[in-house]
Amino acid sequence: MVHYNKADLEHILADGQRLHLLVVGSCFIAADVSVELADRAIEKLKLIGKLEATPAVRKVLEAKLS
Image (cartoon, rainbow, N blue to C red; front, side, top):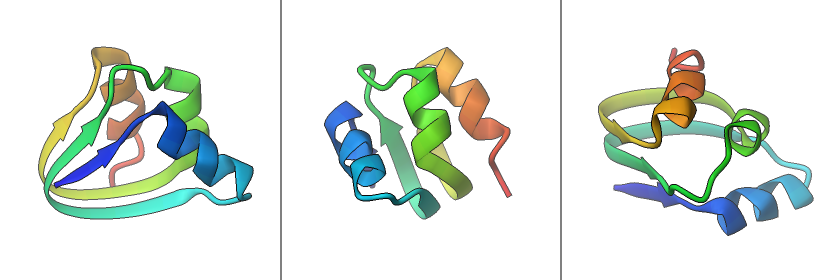
């Protein structure tokens, strides 16, 4: 299981990074993560399993699925 919240993603961006996630299992994006933050911090997502996020964040991340 992978879990990211607002502070996690802000820290990644502050370090000049973007995420390329490969998740087998569950990917949980906390409710405090805005659509804009998720879009900026997560560049790519490959998921074999379940995505748990708010509907708006889920929509943005589904567009990044490869």
